[in-house]
Image 1 (cartoon, rainbow, N blue to C red):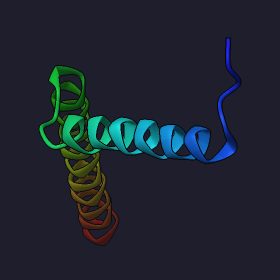
Image 2: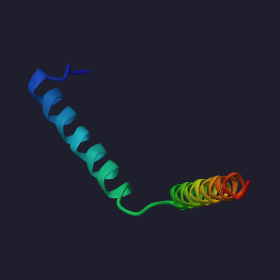
Image 3: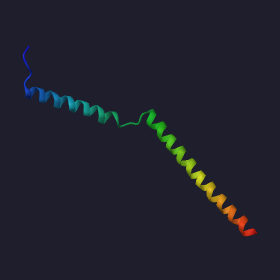
Image 4: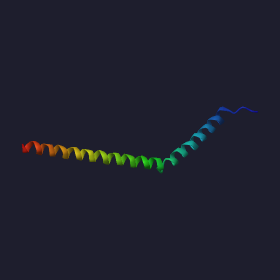
Length: 70
């Protein structure tokens, strides 16, 4: 068996890397189900955080009203 020259090996490596890069680029264009689920979880957590902040502000206002009534 004849050994592969360095030039041919470099060309083969470059072609293989370009082929792999094309898969990576095209594979990341559309989000998959896991990414969609992750976004939904993030949105739910953000909504819960906002609701807790609103609740805290309302509770603080209610406490101030109680203190002012005394």
